[in-house]
Length: 265
Image (tube, rainbow, N blue to C red; front, side, top):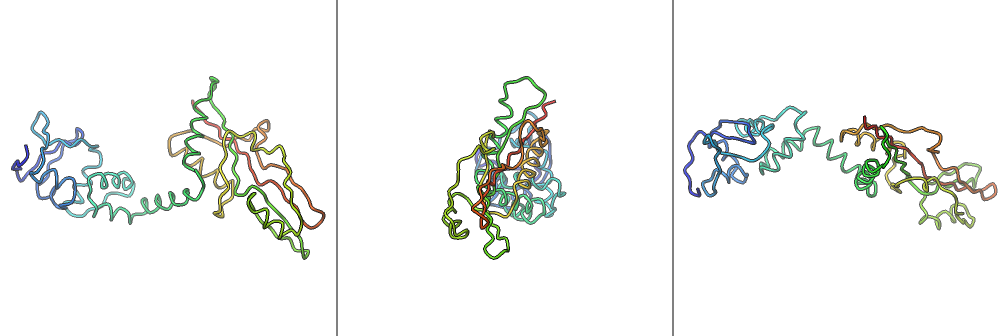
């Protein structure tokens, strides 16, 4: 009940895992959830054996207690999981320390990197949905995805030295000035038409093949068994459409088709 007087030694049941610690340890950071729970202002549920019950995963709670007791940080391989727990329990000093560790720095930089590709995370969810919705009873399913850093690739040779530019359809006006010709992009049977979904264009200096490798890595981290498809019948690879403007300029399609094979057993 509210206003309860807690003993100096506290027996805890955290998601079925039992711990014993001191009241002062739980109250160390007054802005944390644990300090609030054992402040005497709130009801704290007990289990059948009389232990105070915390409805959370007890796997990492011992690391939280070690930090509260002596400022000890966990092994690097559990930093990501413990960071979530530190945020949940509102232990900002621990969360702050964890943000300085390589796993959290790496994950932060990874999220920032992926955020530079338009709709990357939504595209990944759609990719998985298309793979799992395949209505044929095979041991694997293949999803075709079109990736393109820019929609068009232009070349010009104004002074016998090749100049290279990747551009989107919105950059055609710049292309007209660069090539000194009137560019009309012809419609063509682009490989994008064979894809189930597309990702692009993007501004970061990363090639399509490298983005595809990152996507495969992310899928594997989520537990999917995936590989790149090289089946000739799928016509994977770069779209071969191009158009020349005399000897001065050329524009070609910049879209690439990749196949993701999901192995289900």
